[in-house]
Amino acid sequence: MNGKSGSAMVAGIVGAVVLVVLIVIPVFMGIGYKNTEVELRNQCSAQQDANKIIYDKVWKVIKQKAQITDKYAADFKGIYVGLMEARYGADKGSNPAFKWIKEQNPDFSDKMYLNLADAIEGNRAEFAMVQKRLRDIKRVHDNLIMTIPSKWFLGGAEPLEVQLVLSTQTDKAFETGKEDNVDLF
Image (cartoon, rainbow, N blue to C red; front, side, top):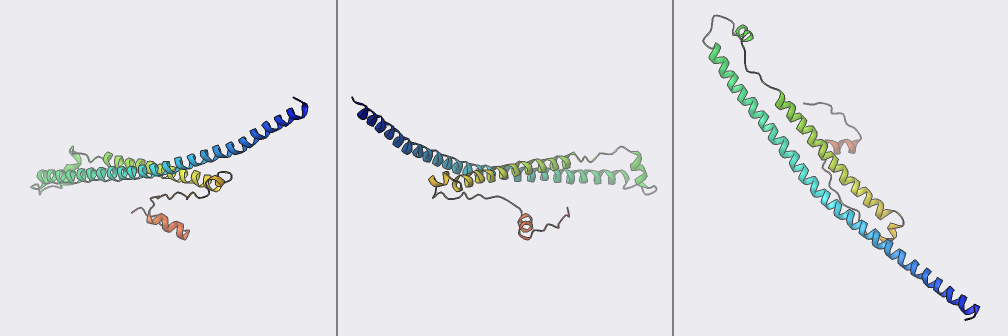
């Protein structure tokens, strides 16, 4: 084997290796980007379903806790009114309010209302967190399909469609750029 043919053979091997690398790397990059895009699409779909489940839970917990609180208030009123009428209904000679001050009477607890308020706040915070997570998945997917080099491999990928649940008031505030309603009731 002479020097020229040996160096030509080495050059041929190096050329073949370079050609294989130039073909293999983009193929594996394309596979990796496509797999990531599919994973994000599936993650988005799963998160959208999770959002529905959590929204349903939030709605039911708040609705049921409010019903319990309303029932407690109505029952307390019925018992208390009956108790006061039974004690003071026939007593016309004195002011029943002064007797009421001296006696021990059932207390109306505000713990149920505080519990309801805590449930509302906690569940709304949980729902906001999963909505943010869904939006973040979309952001990562959008970056993947819009930035180079992944864009070259995912040119036909459609952006994810996400459904965020917002109030009419929020939509109006962002449409007009103004939010003036600060009334609680």
